[in-house]
Image 1: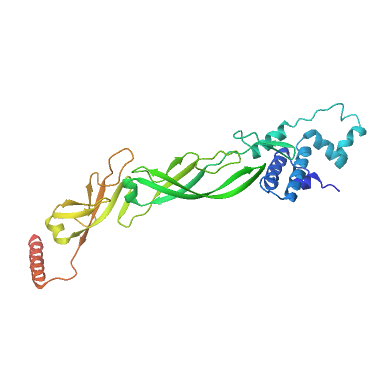
Image 2 (image 1 turned 90 degrees about the vertical axis):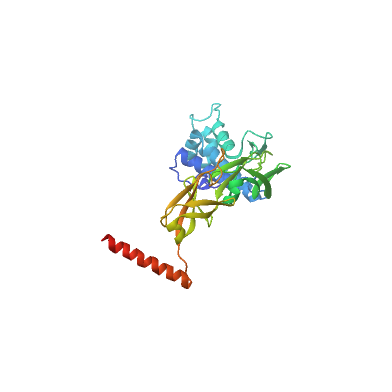
Length: 309
């Protein structure tokens, strides 16, 4: 006994046109011969699903099916409301099928289950990479390794093949965090033979020394307490080397000082700024002479403060 068309699509008899289409799309994808090569049972289910939608997807056929069940095709003998050379329009069904399984690229396609199927074009692939700040600063070539699920057609059969790929990609200096680079025709290959594009999503890796704040970089720099009090000069690291920076007398811990053009490269040229944060350091061990000098300084400082009262 043939299975009820509503049961085949897994819907209720009260289902509307939208629900019928949705159920058909889902099952057609699941049982399509291209998705299940060399599986006769899947091909049989696909034909069953297609037959069910052929009836329920057509309002007139569905009306007769609801009224006469599996004998709906013989309804012409049951009354004057059917037949008379009635023409069935399959345009709606064909457009749904083509939207599910075919684009307009590549070769004309193949006949599957009595319907003309277009080959599929390849899909785009996105690969995320994380690059250190020094690489972002200078730019260069990076080999991207990834895998695609290519769909290859041979003798009318489409096979999904996992393919490992390796593509050299030029990374411009100063590329923004989160920006995508497009590499044409290096994505997934479709059954039409056309490949989609590869998109490389570039992320900045965290750095133990430099912190990104807006467009600029910040770095903590140790400043001896004597230099902080008297002023002087210290070395500040950058992404490329180190530079000397003058420290004004009386600088406080946490105070920020700007080094123009010493940050990270910009894509449109030039570099951002580097912000140096002063971290006052105190020696853990003192010589006897150093201790005496500091004690003398402490007495002078205490006397100065007492005289100010």
